[in-house]
Figure 1 (cartoon, rainbow, N blue to C red):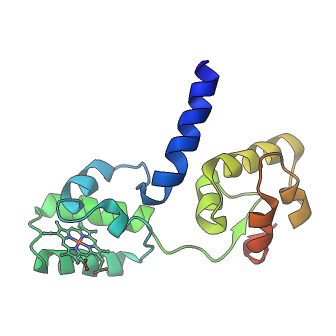
Figure 2: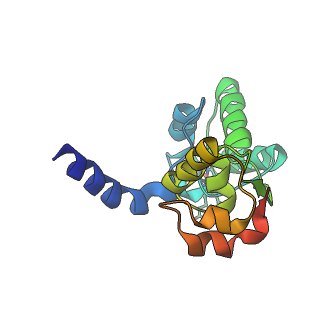
Length: 151
Ligand code: HEC
């Protein structure tokens, strides 16, 4: 019963909010407090920018009426710069953390975790076909991003 509920919750919740979710890390609470007064987090949660560009974004928001303390400015800028940084073009499937597999390949966290678990158990991947064969991984999604995978 608990299992069924967990699966149901995952099905219901994941597709709707996954894209708009801000990464869990230090500074998230402050960022949500400071940045979601006028629009939702989805306004920026899928952006990937350099620290300079995030700095400019915050400045633009102050021009739109955002009032922010110096302490919050530093925290929010740090959070955005670290967690919504420009996406690396490629990812090493034998070394990357699960979160980077999600970011670069656009797969779900569950699929990325399956890739990491597989490699821990079976050793390094040698080719894209090996990645596609991992149970639970969407082979078509991997194929679509195969130019971004290195070994
Ligand atoms: C005082 C209100 C206000 C606050 C607070 C606010 N914004 Fe905005 N933001 C706006 C408005 C107004 C727009 C333009 C909305 C539109 O185009 O529909 C906007 C648009 C944006 C955009 C898209 C346009 C662009 O310039 O790239 C991003 C990204 C953004 N905000 C990020 C942030 C971040 C990050 C924070 C927190 C530091 C924040 N906003 C806080 C008012 C605000």
